[in-house]
Image (cartoon, rainbow, N blue to C red; front, side, top):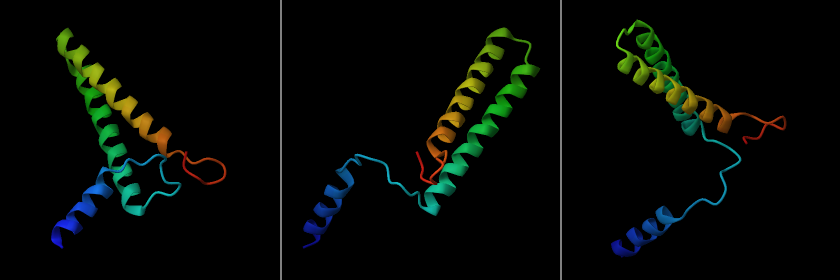
Length: 89
């Protein structure tokens, strides 16, 4: 009996969602907000430390990290932007 229940759960977990849901749960929205905050904070810190750094190799690495986190922030923002009809893209 227990094995049948576990097998059913595994089949559900292995299914790939073909299309994202049209509505995001409040828990998912909170997680997305956290991810955006983390990326924005990392962007600001990397930018600040890159401006403080005098070693070219480290400054370049910090600028790359800044750009990476900024791209991640923009990508999350793009995925969560609301269309005019109120649905998520």
